[in-house]
Amino acid sequence: MEAVHRSFRIASDLASLEPNAFAEALFSRTKGEAIDPAGLREVLELLELGAAREDLVLAVDLSDAARKWRGEDEPADRPPPLQALLQLPEAEFIAVAFRHLLGRAPDLQGAVAYLRQLRSGRSRLAILTALRNSTESRVFGRTQTRPWRVMEMCLTPSVSLAQRAWLLLVALGHGLRSLRRRHARPNSPVA
Image (cartoon, rainbow, N blue to C red; front, top):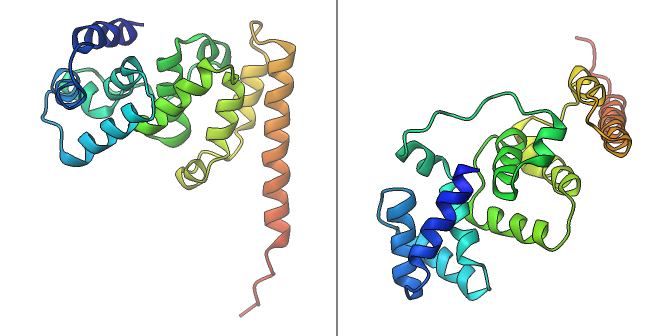
């Protein structure tokens, strides 16, 4: 929650700046560094596409570089229980989801896109599913279902029946895909 308040303070301080000055101040206030040409282009493009300045500040403020510059500890390796994750403020939800499903902080475009999706009514479960089923998640290696984790989340009293059903369906889907892949592999010849 502190990150959200800090980001809104920075955004209100930078609100009156023209786009180039906003982008430069954004990086110096959140990451303690000058913006590089690629970062400047990216911020200006997102502003032209209608991204809110508050969302851009939140996205940059959630980056690993910003966290390191502030001297904050690395985020926990173990994800929070599903109910706790679903209750996090929007920006923190996105940061935690990226960290545990993709192994990294959200990039600027990803953070802005998912903030927009949340604000337009897309459910947090749908966003988690999209991240989990992404190519990057598969490469990161987090798509294997961990039965103990699914059971732990399902047994949490605060998890609703709909959330339990979703978890079990996701686990079942991943298990079936894994079985199909295992049986689709040709048998290796015996040497």
